[in-house]
Image (cartoon, rainbow, N blue to C red; front, side):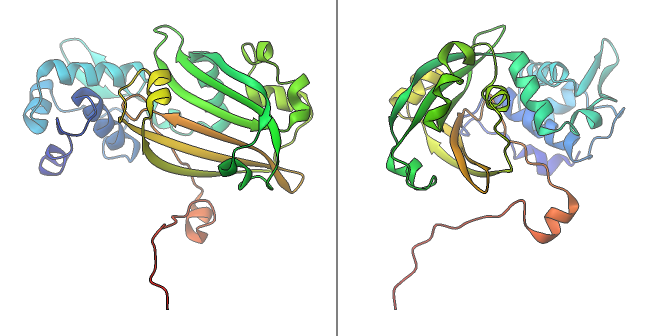
Length: 264
């Protein structure tokens, strides 16, 4: 690890707990191979000195890495990058969805057919009404709220995607059972601050930074449904996986700049 570069990457002014920042830094080092499988991490004292944090902050970060299966902690010896870490990062999106289902439980906050708001209609062929499902996923053991999912679905799915079924089966599991075959998913990731209701559902402060992921799913050559996810960056991260061919052509990931240009 490059000490000068990493030392500036944690800050009490970042709005994210120091132990979470350190976790993310070390997670990144492991993910990109700077720390290889089986390699020893710096000692706790070295990490304290590198990042200017307390030993308890370091221990919490290492504990979270261990819980995530990325680090093996050996009493009296030190912490080592897990041999399983490389395999863990090769999991598919479906594997991740299954893991989320196992590790979390869902609370259905709103359910019903209603008018589609303009921002959603603009992404979805200007549809007038749809089935609206608002859910909050909680960590199963601690009940800590992790993310809000706001889905707008074809109204004809109301008999299948019921409030009671959503508490037992994932949304995509219910749609698959109904014969929906999705062809592609378009994602848009942005940042925002938490308004009063979102802050209340995520148990965070009003004005806190949030990650917003908007998704348009296609079936039959047309938009099938629209889903939006709100996440707190101190509890969650967004991972993007690309094949090398996609990276070269730019077909899987692009960046749009919303900049006002002067008129002629």
